[in-house]
Image (cartoon, rainbow, N blue to C red; front, side, top):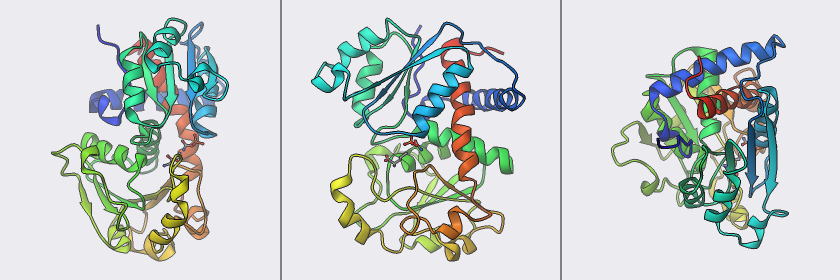
Length: 304
Ligand code: CP
Ligand code: NVA
């Protein structure tokens, strides 16, 4: 039987997401009630980080422990991956010693090659092109706060990066719309969007993109791996800050999300991220709960 991976948001069907989201709700309840839940006892997660992380490492590592299993952290600096061991060989070896693997790396082709050579499920913990675990947490957070996301409008203000591509895939699965506003020169790469995706609209003006939105979201202007472009990006993204004036154009009860880490005064104003419409701390916490549900589903299948 083919192994199930989570390499992009589009790897799961709506039915699978509905299952994982319901499990996340139940698993979160257990956590809040200090109820032990150890379905992954004696199971091991290997986490490979080729880029920095706070939330992803913490949520996967804590989550695996809370599910009764163990998590092992590897990075490029002190593993053989940093010395040129082929990805295919690393996948063969690692997947003989653990039950599931999470990878944060650069190009999507690296994780695709890894998964093709793995005996166990592989989860994308962020690549240059996708960040599906974060968007899963964001969709869960929206549903938790406001109910169904189907038919709603999400405003994406900023860079056409990994988060946006995962949002566009989520829009297709869940049936919502994304208003996208990116500065000139930083537009969507059509090769990274499925040809038939009719769930988004491009708007030149970021304020226009916020009109009527139920959720306004953004991310850093310079993602990991693009640091040398930082100065040029600071100039190009001038005006793409999510501030109070832009939030005013959204629905009165619109939420604000940011995957974090954030730069106040660049992509978001302090009045917004620290204001009443912001749910960024719930959003960060929900990484833990949705990823526990994801680990349970990928290792055990439909358990309940
Ligand atoms: N949002 C997110 O993935 O955060 P980290 O880079 O800290 O893991
Ligand atoms: N787009 C950002 C997300 C960080 C969690 C990056 O790739 O650096």
